[in-house]
Length: 164
Image (tube, rainbow, N blue to C red; front, side):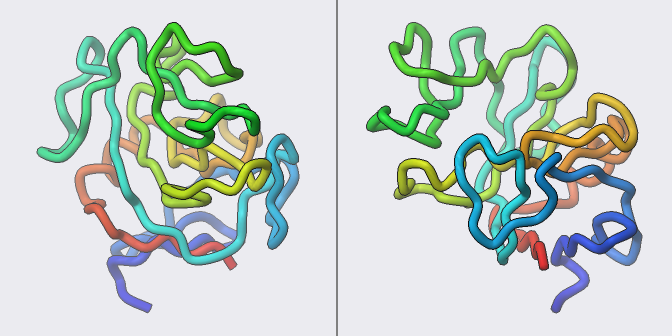
């Protein structure tokens, strides 16, 4: 393990010598992640992208990509673009990346079931802002706004996210 790895522990996410409080999926941790189960998948994942709302905050890192008004993330197992960024209009089930709430103002994308997604194995495993402390996610790892904004600029593409 490297100090540059993000390691999920029972007390939070250890990264760069600090433990950051976080929440995980309502389904707990799973070695057999499935779409809609609410679980956070076990394994070694990597940060492969960063998105941000340019109307709400400056770019947190030079490699961050602005979220546009038509940006969506496909979560439909029938969609050929399952577990990919897509644009509206989109005829399959999806999540809006540009939300009214601040939950996706800043998003780190993991390589869980990406780029060659296996339908039904789970989609959109992100690191993002939590709704509130101790409130579970649908499978992502979530942080307070301040902590996420401190973590994101220190992450780089390829940063390992270890979920045991």
